[in-house]
Image (tube, rainbow, N blue to C red):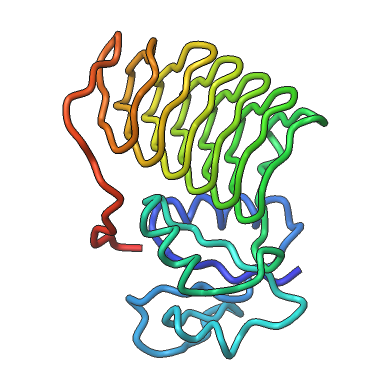
Length: 216
């Protein structure tokens, strides 16, 4: 299957390598607004994002390979494509329960684990070595960073970012667009648009779903 990758930063390069190693998908084009004109290099088209209208067909799928949750959501909404147009990318070294479900456009990185009855939404990132234990819910546009652990029955709402090596204890809910700092241990529910850090994690400020400038 041909794949169009949106974005060409560090996160995108890992996804491209995942697809190249498995050989299951063929990278057809890499779209990023740092490319001002369309050009072809070693069989791959490099072009601005607006070029997608000329490249997409029924045999092509799209991955929005942007690490920033807000920017990823913004691009998905602007593309205005049917949900089935987005490819779910799962690294072969990850472990996925047969009873888990994973949404369209989500990326599961190397050695991640998703256990029984967990539900992962659309356009999420389950990053390298992350553990999503049993019966968790991770809503769309969330990012579970490398080596973070969601223990059982955790609910992660839309757009939440769980920092690297953070842990969320069982049964808690992290409300939408909150940020949990790297290495933090969450032992109580976190309200929406909050940043919490430390062990135990404490709220230090409010955050908002703001699209920041980012090199894709």
